[in-house]
Length: 585
Image (cartoon, rainbow, N blue to C red; front, top):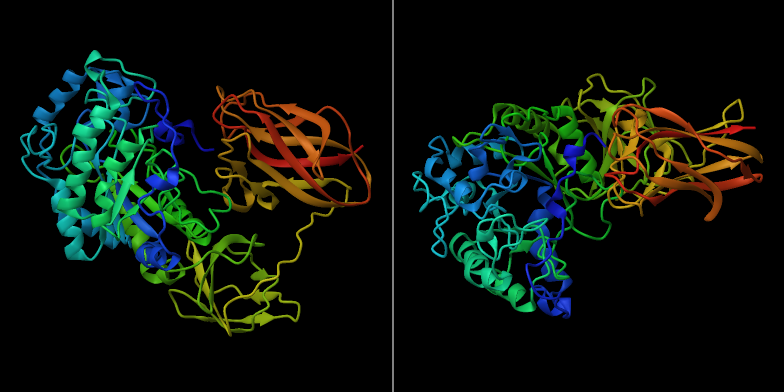
């Protein structure tokens, strides 16, 4: 976990303003219920090929840019109305001075295209209730309420079509801090917000969604912050799907409607979502909407490696930009996207249209993808002696370095171990090697078992762990840590081969103050050992300390599965775990 700012409340379930939860068969509300696999595959084909898209969070919140009447907002930019509890009428006044005259849809789409992105999803209405299109259903929109008098959604849809990118819209269907009856995380703070949710859906949300679908025909409808609406609300919001048979929507409509895509936010799941279409949405810095004080931009190398990591697990990367109040995408974001585009221009075949890696783990710092009879290796850090890849049963024809076309020396042993020489030119972000095979890759991975060191101790490193869960992940490559451990149901485990004996257990961990208090237990071969630990705070998520646990771990001779299993998690995350050591007593 890099920072608490990475964990936003956009995924929170908002309680409805009034009325008990409705009960119904979710499938009957799913607009794609009964769809055949062939039809779904056809509908999702371009999206699966794309792998990389641009998210755009832009609205009235870009004007205050994280500050209101001298008070600096601590949270993410687009939540300023909520975070600082700005009255509805006061926030609406921003519209009178919102005049983004430098907005140019052709420039924005051009930035996305040059970055190698294949689609764009733009906020048409965020939680502040302000529509970024000319809505005839409600006057609180950029055409009617501002001096700008233009329709950015219409202009972006047209520009995307001209430049060959798919265009989609984000719509906050239930959380709305401006209109009476709209949901608000944590409750309303202004009487002007009070009202009936179902009336809000009927008079504002459903009509606006209908306008978006009818007028702009987006390829994607990206819902956000689900709420327990009535079946009638869901039916009203999805009424236009029948007339848009190619439409793709995500899993955030709520009420059990599955949607087409899983949407992990600010995180890359350890194993992706096997068998499902999924998309990580992520900010370039720490905020979605523009915030002038947020200059914590991710490096180009990290962004490229994120894209590679996501593709290797079969997912898409929806990377966000937050334009300012003048209509300009901040230059640091543009620069990073341009660098990603330059890398993709040389190495895009290892990303676009690829399938997930056939390997569960790689013995080097990097990732793998597959397309037909080619196994692509994206290598983040090259071992001086070259790469060794175990378990590949398919014959190798040759190995070629992307970018240079250099034919790389490659040898394959009878047991499936492939040795690949280091190329002459190394890319600082990721060097791509294409292994051309005789057929689609077939891999039989050898069992990964950790042996004791010369001292008899076991070093269980983060990079060697098997991660179980939807959010937990490895940060920082082979020398990194296990982070984003935000669910108590997630766990980590290692397989060791012990001669038998008694061991003390210690962990190197970090935990930012305010997130301490998690408890965990060491589990051996599925059985509790009674050896537990309490996570106390360190100075930050990067400040590591050693925690020695009470008790003795007894292992019989043989192979064992050792798991760290959380019991409670009162804070943001369990901990950042760099390694665990078993030392002979």
